[in-house]
Length: 351
Image (tube, rainbow, N blue to C red; front, top):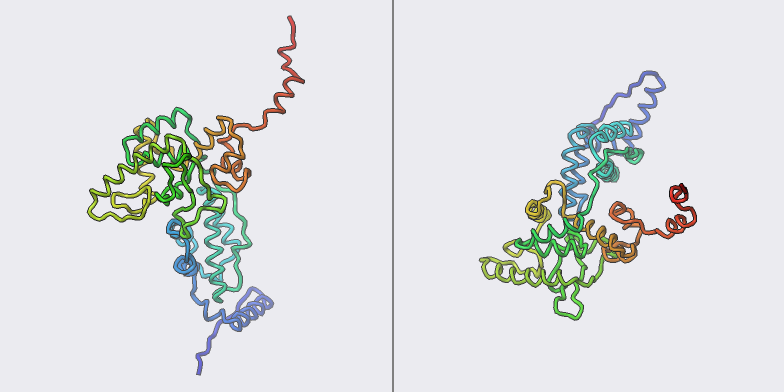
């Protein structure tokens, strides 16, 4: 004989109590009363972190885990999932908006949406109230910036005696993403052809694919890139012979044992280069070498369409949106015409 489950219905009025009783009966019939008993927001989030990130890259898993453990579980984790309301989530997001950027708030909401959706699919809760909540405007994040030509030259020079030299050269002179360079293999590098080039066809993402289909590209290399890669290959050969257990993965940029570099390795080495170049290492990231590539090309008068193809964007709107602060004004014709039609009044005043 199955155990009888008793749950009292209450309310401020008789009508409210009857509605509460009706909801309890409905939940019981839907199988929610038993299955969701004691199931918390933390349970839902941890379940999603464990089983809902299959196929995602390690960087994505680490980021979601850190955000969940730092921002979601401590403040909302103890609440029973069936008791979570849209108002709860709105207040929580509004409170987080005082200290976090809009982008981080978007990521937090996304984690909670996915965690609750997974719980909903497993009959832990009737609906996903997080979907009813908007993302508030958060604090302004640190704006990205680009190196000047003089600063870029200083960084290139400072990197010459380091293992990161070729990496810095390719970042600044080709605008490749960090995730693309870390996955670059020698089989995708042509140093001896009539037009040396690299095939940017892979990344360190879980799938091994580039960020988008348009990101796949084969740019020709400036002479400085070719020289840097040839020197890098010689240095790598020396390191390979000296290593007791070299792992040959055909990677261009590796650790001292031939293994893939992680983002932390790159950031640490890049900071050392910046310090040597006389720049504040805390104010720059490796990604901003790509921003510098866009800025320097734009200042040189290269059309936006060409820049967009070189950095692997699917269209110019992406380039304009992401790098709008690095692009010079590209439509001077109207200004020049109006200056001729309506010259400065100061120039028209005669004495």
